[in-house]
Length: 489
Length: 95
Image (cartoon, rainbow over all chains, first blue to last red; front, side):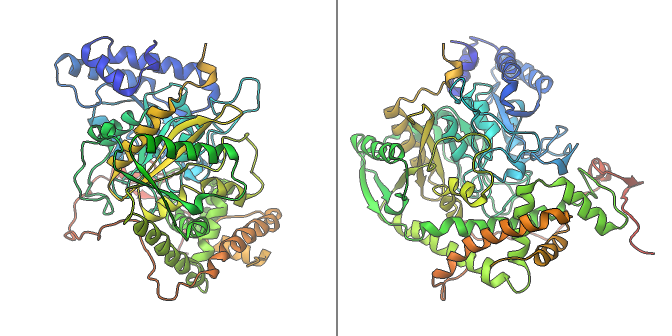
């Protein structure tokens, strides 16, 4: 067993017992990052910073003043502002941007004792399901069968997912606006949690769609996810939408089991053309939960099919507003122009990639005079109906079980010509963001080609505990081996 | 809704994004296909439904309207592409 094969929980115990030092643990992961450069999972590795923080962690461990994640190597999606460390959002327009402040979530992770090993690659401004839209090039999925085409890791948190799967860190932060933690977690065979909207502070995270964005942990086990969420969550006065509610001990809920739980199977998630292997895995997941003492109930979420078009009005609308700040004046790229307006247009024309440009233009259009009611207000009304579907279902059930994505990882370059085909990747994850609920993807099996497939568990608002307990039962039953083929002997 | 070149140009101007002439047609096609696709929402009757703004489950809190931060011009200006003393510098706006 090498140090990079440990789970986060095992590493924490090993550090506490003194079986190895935080510096040794950091060095093992930094070496793995160097060896896996070809995956392009990191935009900025932070080796020096990691060693310095690991040394400080060793001092605390020696003094028995260790904090909950003391010495644990984590990676940070390059959407979180990190003080003095380049923060790009995967975009050309943030060239050279070194924040003078630390996002709340990464500050909390520092205060929990973690050691940041680097900033991970992502779709530009977190807009994408493939990691192909990054200005820093695509990330490769470590699960691609040897000798086969390069596969996407999913997105937008694709660098984080690939880094966790390839054992370059013990956990990573992601953000999820429409599936950006859960879909790459499913594609890379890891666990990804989108907490309840408001559970983690959004302060200092580069904003995409403010009413949907939420940070969450990406790890190799459900237990590790709970440990990491405990460090990330909590009320923050700097984010008015962060919830002033107590943070329970999530780790304590993981082994709670599902005896007596009612798990809903939403009828509308059976899609035409769903691959049989995904439908089979879904049925298998329900069977595992029944064997562990849960009952499964068929439920209806009637507005499911409207979630994606609703999302693709609301998210671009909010993005067009949020991204107005990139004007070449205060930070990042500036492309000169004769006038101030020309400078704005040149900077934004050159600084934004095609998918970001597409979404900003759609958002601008649906918010423009004469179209606001027909598109934006209409979408907000449908969003109410989608959220109501869930709250009515949760009167009868405690959790929902669905597939995470309608397909496994696809080849880099596929689905690029048709934006709507790419958007369909998030069909099962987007409704959860619209309703603001917690959802987790847990690896549950392999496709016929040997690629990971995930199941999604959705819970009531602020009931991540039931989500963890349910996901843990699936994890135990699935016995999924999280090592990608490239790491197997 | 099918968008034409002129509309795309107008939206791009509103969004302050320079779009090369050569890309206007393909962009019009892409944006039109997205807009046509989202128009399926018109099938739902939302007459009495309140719009959902924000993603939270709790009412937004109020706070005192007081200055809580500031006095750090060097931090604020640290990433400025161009500055003069403690100001951002931009192309001339007033003749």
